Image (cartoon, rainbow over all chains, first blue to last red; front, side, top):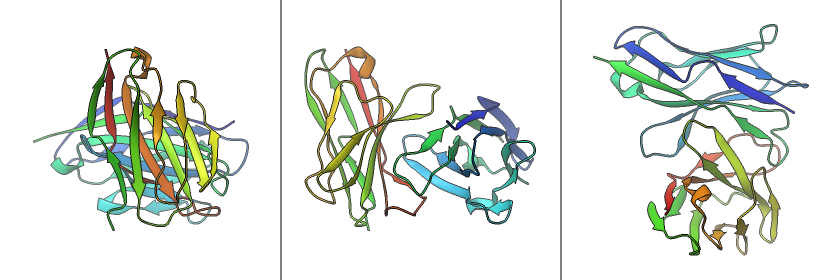
Length: 115
Length: 113
């Protein structure tokens, strides 16, 4: 079965500096991978997704992620952090997104942005 | 479109009480899901439905029940609340088979004392 590991439970950056949130996955097949963001007291919002097209995926709010099969990674990056990026970020893997219920969530990474 | 809405936003229950968490979507999505989120953990699937009248268990179904009488609504029932059910509950939906993106509601924060 597929699984996902977010390597950092908490990341702290200064405003204007780059953001790197790390995600490794395990899958027997060619998975689909997602990053969701959760702002305080809000639901989850899709940032970006990889579904076997281009390996570099661009999402909303300047975020992007690169699918690296050899490293089984799907790290999320942003060149310059903004205060509004402070939130919880979840990496999600799915082997059978065309199926019913196959999404597996990472434990989340809390991003803090310092002024 | 309101998307996925959930009520209530917050609730405190006593052990043994029952309640229903409401979830409604106005996107005409066939698939709906209930997740729970515990502190420091990712979301875990409780139940899901692929259409009206069809439900199935997820990873952590014990202590919960669901029904799906309409496309729009997918209520989650807790019959005998226990402290282990203290969590944040999220409802989500997606269009159907062959689509990948789930849309989430804002969540219900439940505390059982």
